[in-house]
Length: 125
Image 1 (cartoon, rainbow, N blue to C red):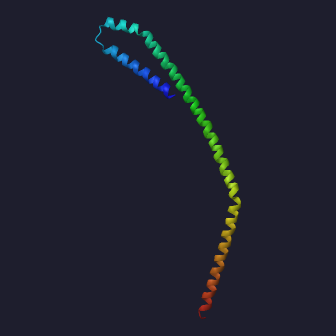
Image 2 (spheres, helix red, strand yellow):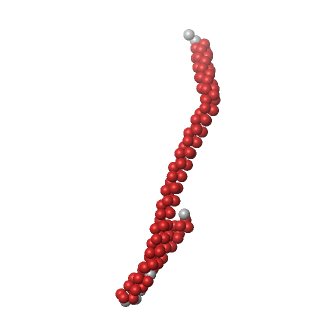
Image 3 (cartoon, helix red, strand yellow):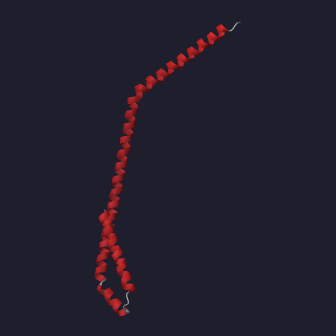
């Protein structure tokens, strides 16, 4: 695609340069018209090549955008599958951690109760 764009750019630049040279050349109107008639075929050839390159570029961009959409859909599906598998794999660990947290909370509550009992035993009634 880069070669096509470069070729297209060269043709357009050449056409603009040729037009500028023709318009600014110190020729009479009669000579300028004669020169333009003689270069008509070359201008038509350049215009046709530009049209072909533009069509190819459009087709390439369309194909690239379609390919990009397909790749993004595949990537989204792969990510979704990976997340679901990861969630399934960590489920036993998650349950074990929840159980461990409950045990820690229970132990903390028991320690708080014992501490409170120890404070109550130390205070004279």
